[in-house]
Length: 143
Image 1 (cartoon, rainbow, N blue to C red):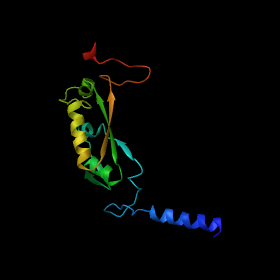
Image 2 (image 1 turned 180 degrees about the vertical axis):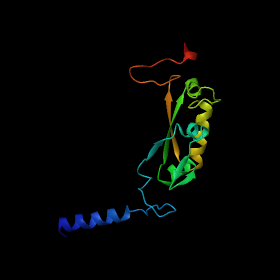
Image 3 (image 1 turned 45 degrees about the horizontal axis):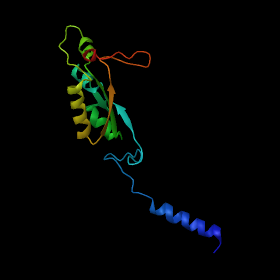
Image 4 (image 1 turned 135 degrees about the vertical axis):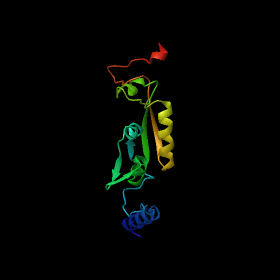
């Protein structure tokens, strides 16, 4: 048998056995193989947006944001976790607001993410407020 024929047959055998059945969402749209790729979304603000009256829509219909993202192929949700983010309650003066991106809020987001089959990438911010390479303020409780 010629080497080129052997290589060709081997190639077709290997590729045919490695094929998997495609996953198709309920509505028939095919996005990609979620077993091989990660499609992430930062939903850190989702709870806060909902609490101040914001809505998420899919084709005009109001839906749970976690449901929308999971239906469109998101398989990992990024969530920020600050030490004590009291600044988020100061964004809306005169209104009773919760503290967002703190432990209690993030627990809710983790629960919602898992309910719709998505994994969570928890992004720890070792600060009470925004931090970047030029400004890393130690949380007040750590001083």
